[in-house]
Image 1 (tube, helix red, strand yellow):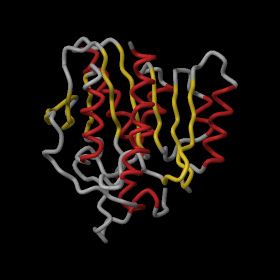
Image 2: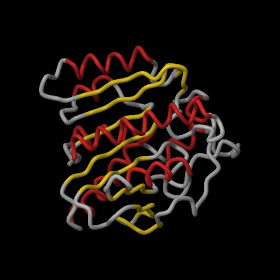
Image 3: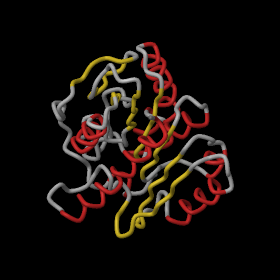
Image 4: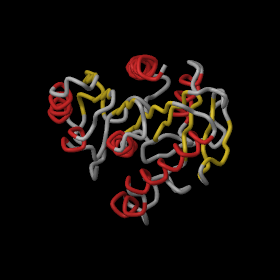
Length: 239
C-alpha cells in the first residue's frame, strides 16, 4: 500500500456528483441513491480518495438502478487522501484512517440500515475499502461481497470468509498482484460451501474499476465489465 499504485490517477472530487443526495447515516455523511424502501441495500466502501469520487458515485447510481438502496459513507472523516499535500504523505495519513476504524463505522451503518427495514446487505470494497468489506464478511454482517483491486487483504482474511465472495484483481498490481489473487482463488475453491468468483482483468492496473479515464474507451469498457460482474453477483446472492 505504500507504493505509488494506490495513489495513481486520483479523481477530481465533486461534492455534488451523482443523482442521489448526501445525508447522515449512523453519524456519517453518506451518499445515498436508490429507493430507501428497498429491502436490499448495497454498501460501497471507497478507496483512499473517498466518497466524493464521481466515478464511484456513478457506479452507485447504476447499482441503485437495479433496485437497491445504495449507501456510500464517508469513512475517511472528511479527509480523503490528498497526494498534493506534502504534510500528509500516505504513511502518515493512513495512521489516522485505518481500515479498522472503517470496519467499526461500517457496523453502525449496517445496524442503521437494518433498523430501517433492510433485510439483506451486500458490500463492495475498492482498494482500501476491500479490507473493510472482508472484515464485514468474516463477521457475517453482510450476505454477499465483492472486492475490487483489494488492498491489505490477506490469505488469512480469505480463509475466514464463508459468504458468497467475488474478487476482481488487476494484471498490473503490486499491491495485490495476480499471484496473491490466485491464492485467494485457491482458498475459496477449497470451500465447497462458499460460492465464489475470481477474475484477474488483463491489461489493467490497480484502481481500474473506479479511477478510470472516462475519455478512454478501453478503460471505460474494462471498468464496465467489472461493474456488470458486481451487479450480477448481487442479483444472484441478495435477491
